[in-house]
Image (tube, rainbow, N blue to C red; front, side, top):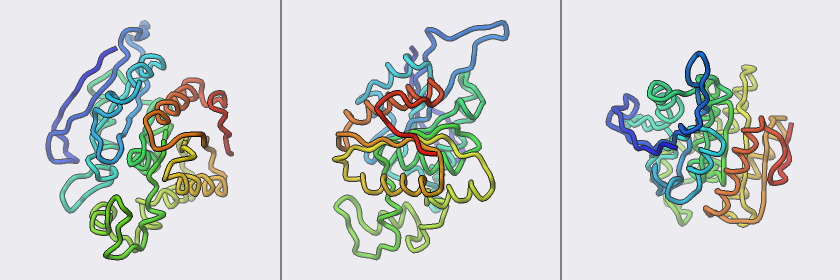
Length: 273
């Protein structure tokens, strides 16, 4: 297992960016054509986090080795992995497009869509859903844990609003015109509908949220929307809050399913078609 920190000059961010990487190199398969390309997971951190969170607080290094998948963990600041064109920081383009291409040039990764996954927790769960759908031609799977699907709650808010975490000015700076948020490319429901309208492939989606999590209502709402739209996905609710204990358990379950091609064995989740 190789653990490293890499930096490069990003065109999307107009500066040097740093990400953490895990490469299960010990048991890489070889053939007459050389080393077999690795599957890749682009794993996003939560609000107030950094690219080291998954390494510091979870067993992702063990899981990378166990499921033979390379894991790349970028920083997202607190910008919800959305493009900030005003400041010239294209977090969405960087996460959903540029980083994939750069890491494919740097490491022996598969270029197949079904071998390229995006995941995250909380803010990163939203980022995984949004960018996994926005760049659906790249990603075969989305792993979304306790996702901060806050377009449901901040759309149309007015100056003076504060939910105890952030206020109107912050959400306006990250999501843009909040009166036009729903239906935009920052709205996961709108992205699903656009993919359906164009008969485009929708990534396989795994969602989970603890029954004591303050984000349970918005996760249920998106789950019910996908059921209504007959979008195949896996959704799990179980005991737990907005905690690493819950995320460690469910990211393991998601990777187990991915390695088995999406079987229903694991935490007792139901799959919806």
